[in-house]
Amino acid sequence: YEAFIKVKGAERVESFKIYDRNGNFDFYHYGHLLEGSFRDGVLILSTTSRIYTFTGQQLERLAELFSEKKVKAVYEFNADRFERPTDSKAIIVDVIERED
Image (cartoon, rainbow, N blue to C red; front, top):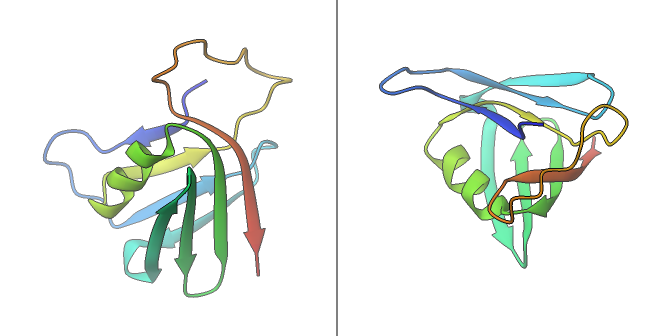
């Protein structure tokens, strides 16, 4: 399981995708990402049309990468398909809540 796909080197991306545990996804241009917040271990991203709340492990690192426009895609963990990483430093997105 990989929680996200990171931009490589000097590569520039204009958009990102948010995948749920079933493979469904939303995609956005980075210009539609209005703000992000990381508080008490919870990452919240507000776009022009939805709000996403991420809970999991090591999400502060993911928040930093979003703020730098370094994320191409983020994936919600699916225990039916993957073994949970045992590394305490691994980024794991346990739940993505989507609010329209």
